[in-house]
Length: 123
Length: 137
Image (cartoon, rainbow over all chains, first blue to last red):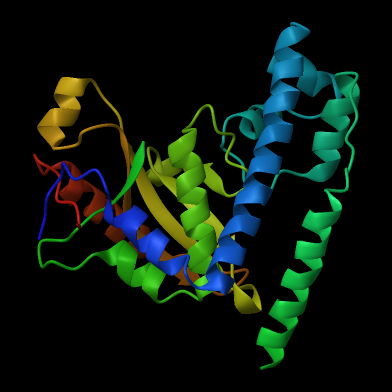
């Protein structure tokens, strides 16, 4: 059956159904957190760059990289952003990267998730 | 923006067949990326390290790149459906969409043969020639 105007898409219904599996849900939520964090770092760097009035090409020069690598980072044209490049850009923009522990509850959930996954892997 | 799965003339849905064949955790990650892109599409979404604009013969396409068990490489190929409201209506889409066409997998440190990319592009052409779009429901 095909139809184009349905609001509840197959994608959403399939996702909601599969999310009932705890392992699927955990993998989905972990991926969503990782995506959001990576995206937030890159967007924050780009926002700092714009606030400082620095072009991507100029920023690339400041970190001794070619302009295309910086442009790709900011335009979804590069996967697996390199941490050294991200750190260098932050430094050139007068910022720094930090790892901030999440709440105790979130860390407990992370430990539990890890334990569950180990049991699943060995089961 | 919403995710929509292309349906082939024979009724099969290549992207769903691909996702159904992936390990559950990989399927979950693909789904999370699709949702992230749908929530804040390019260029507002940087890609989060998983969503990439393709180049060369695949210019105009986007891929989601994941690594699965055994470091197997898994890719999901998508097109963005943007346009004026009239154009979207002509395509049968109530709003902009991510058209999810198909997926492919390969061992680590190998490349897809060009003929595989050609097959992906053919699906895309078939999809884009449909007014209205053939979308799996």
